[in-house]
Length: 336
Ligand SMILES: O=P(O)(O)OC[C@H]1O[C@H](O[C@H]2O[C@H](CO)[C@@H](O)[C@H](O)[C@H]2O)[C@H](O)[C@@H](O)[C@@H]1O
View 1 (cartoon, rainbow, N blue to C red):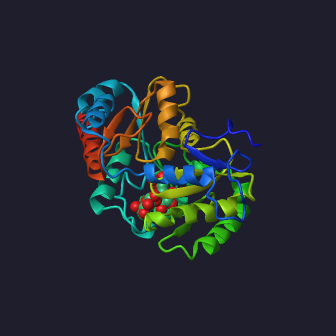
View 2: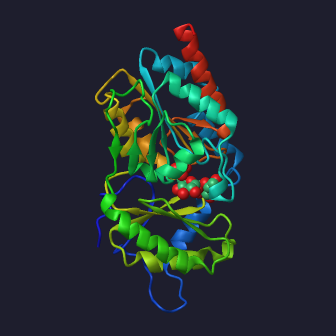
View 3: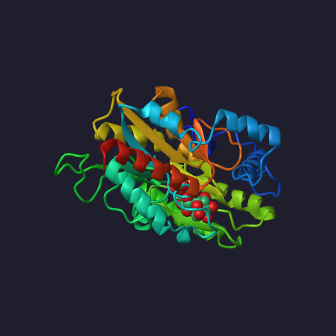
């Protein structure tokens, strides 16, 4: 059996060799594993609060970053703010078609201004090339494939020494296997209406947002039938998406640490990283900040969710307001 202790804080649904409770391969019997996947698939993207009481308790524990803006500014006083932004559900609203998750011009303009004030990185589950083609800002750092593909700004950045190029790809050996698994997943899921498989270079995503709920267990079976032959891959989950990733000690939290180090802020007490994200995979980064008691994490969610983030924002429009306020306050401080 594979040891699960080496993997990330994102909720891991499956590693080959785990006790999956599947009893009769080749029969119609639904195993415990598939049932637990489907339960988890249901829970991954709540569309309404559990109850008024639990929602208001949660808001007390994770107050709005907009309402607490002055307090956040106070916490960051005298420190260098470094910004980490997830893409889907944070900078762009969630839509049915992953290829059409465009960012608004207004948001792009805000992020452009933000990057002039603070070092800014986009940290996404998407492949780096794709997310940067959506964001279209060459002055940012990009960490694609859940942080497994990191690149510094194309144009000279004031935050990094001249001619110093930045590239980190800790999972290159997995490229052929991810391509192979991607092809197999496309083949296995093609009969399931609404399923979509995305090749995110160092990981693959199986989307089920447009799959009828009574077909989720079929989809889970197909994904498992592919994954069971790949002991070096694991399955985690995002918003109506199953994420297939290499089992390596690397995730969005490690990407955050790597970027802070590259910017010269490792072991610094005067740095204040702010990470904003909406997904389970962002929890790895929130946890790093919480454990280090450094900076803060902001979860983008309308509904109560278990999280290591300290604050919340409801949707991308609120993220934009928060970023605008950060820019304004920086400009005020600098007298711009
Ligand atoms: O880390 P992120 O930037 O949040 O990327 C996570 C996944 O985001 C995308 O899927 C999500 O957004 C889609 C478009 O709104 C939506 O259709 C899907 O249901 C969401 O899960 C992206 O397509 C995936 O590849 C990323 O892994």
